[in-house]
Image 1 (cartoon, rainbow, N blue to C red):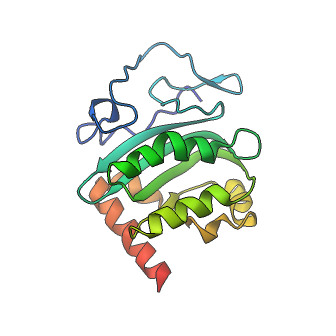
Image 2: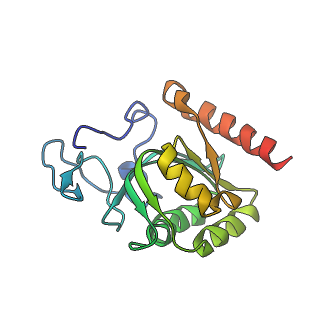
Length: 187
């Protein structure tokens, strides 16, 4: 897991630690000191700890004018024991929402497991964003995690989209394609 780095090809466009509106403003990173773990497996030091013991993230891009953020996740998304959705909501997305972000793209190709609890945080998030014309879409979640996500009926509140070519595109193009897909889902 230590070899899996957050996507870095947009670093010249956005860096959360340099954005004074970001929850990670002012953070410093080591390229060589591996200190964070997921179940005793070290992860790359560029991932951001947001309060979960099993899930880490990286804000890849934010556009305040368009009101969207692209966030990459790694680890185990565990709502049953860790209540990761509450931590993600309260400590990250609610902070970003206050800054005008109401559309969230979560890249979950490195989310190895998903364990659900109830859907109240997802329902609340959906209602909050819906008032602003916003949404949450999860990209490229592995099939086993998608199965558990769908079984919990969380797709009532969050979109799931397979979009493996996202890395070959600029962030504004990724957003436009996901936004267009969401518009099609609403019809």
